Amino acid sequence: MKVLVIHTFDQPKTGSDHVVKNEIELLSMHGIQVELLRLRARTDFISIVQMLFDYAAYYKIKRRIRAFKPDIVHLHHLDFGSMAAAVYAVKRFKLPLVCTLHNYYLLCPSGTLFYGDQLYTGSLKYDFSYKSIQKALYRNSKFLTFGLSFSMFIHQLAGTWLYFDKIIVSGEFARELFIRSKLRVLADKMVVKPDFCYPAGKRRQKAAPAPYYLYAGELTDENGIAVLLEAFADNGLPVKVAGKGFLKKLVFGYSEFYPNISLVETDDMEYPDVLFENATALIFPAVWYDPFGSMVIRAFSSGLPVIASGAGYIPEMVTHGFNGLLFEAGSDKDLKSKISIFEALDWLECKSYRANALQTYHDKYGPQGAFSDLSGIYHALVQRHA
Image 1 (cartoon, rainbow, N blue to C red):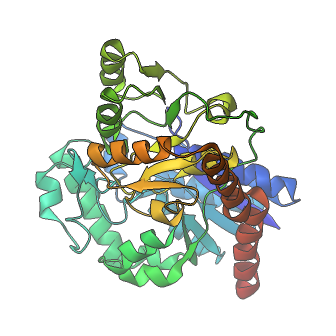
Image 2 (image 1 turned 30 degrees about the vertical axis):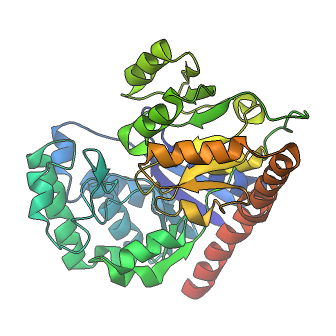
C-alpha cells in the first residue's frame, strides 16, 4: 500500500508534528510505502489572499499524486486554504481521503475553543459567528478572523468537508462536540484513534516515590500554568515545569520566590525520558479541550500516574483512583486537594497506580494497537474505492 501524507510543519514544533513523525515511522516499519508532502506555513499577505483556497498547494498536491500514485491520502495539520485545496485535489483523482483533526478550526476561528483565560464555544452552532470577529479570535485580528470565518462559511456551504471519507479524532469527546455543532453531519465520518508513543525506558526501581512532580508541555494560559503554579506555591512540594512558551517569565518569577518550583527549559517539545522516569506523578492542568493528551500517554508509557484536570476528553484517558486522579479544571484548590490525596498514599498504593498507568499504555496507547487501528482504516477505505 502507498500512502501520501500531507502536513504543514510548524516552527516551533507542535504536538501535531510529533504525531505525523511517529505515524510515518510506524507505517514504514510495517512495510507500507509512505511519502510525505510538506506544505509551507505562511504568515504573510499571500496567506491572507489564499485563506479561501490555496491554488499553489492545489497544483503541488496534484503533481505529487501523479508522480507517487498513492492508494490513499492522509491529511494532517494544514492551513485552512491548503486544506480545502488538498480536498479538491484528491477529489480529482477519486482517491480515498483521511483527515486527522489536530485542532478545532473547522468549528471556531480560535482553533482552540479558548479565548482570554477561559473556554469559548460561542462559534459552535453559528454558520457565521459575528462574535468571533468582534473578539478577534484568530491571531488577535478582526480582519484575519473575518477572512477565516468567511472561508469556513463558504466551504461549509459548498460541502467541502463532506469529501473526507474518514476523520480521525483522539477521543469520543471530539465527536460529541461536532454532534452539538453546525457540522454535526461530520460526526458520522469520525473514528476514534488515540495518539500513541513508543515505549519509554524502565522506571527507576525504588522503595518510595521520586521527589518531584512534573509538568511537561507548552507554557500557555490554556494549559493551566497559572493553576499549576498557584497549587504548588504554598505546599512546598517540588515540581519541575518543563517546556517553553510565552508564560516562561511567569514560571521563572514563581521559581525565584518559591524554591520548590523549578523551570526546565526544553527545545521543540523534546522532553528527556529521565524527567518522566524519576517523577512522582505528571500534573496535567489543561483548562482547554486538549485534542492530543500526548503528555498523558508519554507518562503512562513510563508507568507514571497522572493528576489531570477533567477538561475535554482527558477523563477518557485518566481513570480516577486507578491510573491517576482528576480535579476540577481551572481550580488550583482542587488540584491542591488531589495532590494531598496522592501524597497520603502508601507505597503499595503508589505501586498499584504506577502498574495501572503502564497497563493503560499497553492496552490503549502502544504502537502495535495504533498500527492496527490506522492500517484497518486505510484498508477498509481502499477496498471501498476499488
